[in-house]
Image (tube, each protein chain N blue to C red):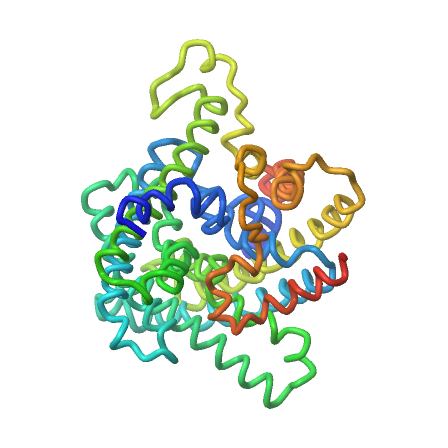
Length: 229
Length: 205
């Protein structure tokens, strides 16, 4: 796989939010405005890039048995650094992202890339993968935020849009609108993706933390699937 | 006392963790297909939320703040929660196997659940120990808030598993099958919680 493919797979084919359905909580919560979405995307991308580089560099040193706790500590360290940087240089962003900034630690995308990519690949490839996935996350967030802000608030990055600002659908910026727009976007992806996407149902099969929980949840999911069939 | 009731009720209905704060969406979408797994998961979440708050609140105000280590909050909290969950699981497995059987499978899933880390961070943010509030008052508020958040999670999961079993029987357009229709249903469920806005304030006004 060449570098360009490695980068671009995160944008479209394996988009972490819209195809792999990872990191749903921050996606729903911070896509109320484009500015928030860009901020969240940038913060997550920085953490993803740093954690991928360091985890890949340390992949031969970290013992296999305790790798997940090691990854979590590394990721938490980078999140703390990003948190302090945002607090210092963009206090307004810190205010609007609030609790979701420290919660990047438990964002499945980051642990997922560490587990699926960074611990098997060279440092440079992991860095490119991190950037690509981060860009894909940001892209999905901005796409969703654009829909929600333009139609829900009648503005784009704070600038009012002529007709829409008088006729906005405020519910789209509230919690139900988040679920609704996300549902529509995934339906659109299902509709337009030519090749059948690897149907990673949400829940367990696509969950990078499956390793972490000893696939406990997968058994539950499997049992449920069996019952439903 | 009224303050505590207000905290409890608003955590359950108004600031519902899943439906208005978007915390813990993964288990909400993943384990809500059947009622019994939904309740099992929620009970485990309530348990871990209470335990995590009981552990992290004193750590924040007796260990981190007096030593100016506030910036270590994220790292310390996630490690404490992870260790705690492991410990509880081992203990349950050894001493109360029946409870482990019903809750145990859900416990490891909770380590990386953002609702649990979220509740601990929000508690130390919203109910801090200051010159005017004592440690125990802040601690009581935090515990009540965790209980309410957990109960809110339970309520959302139980309601949503009912909604989902109704969807199963319907003929859904092809591209909406699976996750998209679930999300649209979640939107409508969350809409019903918007109706609670303002109720609590007026109830105790």
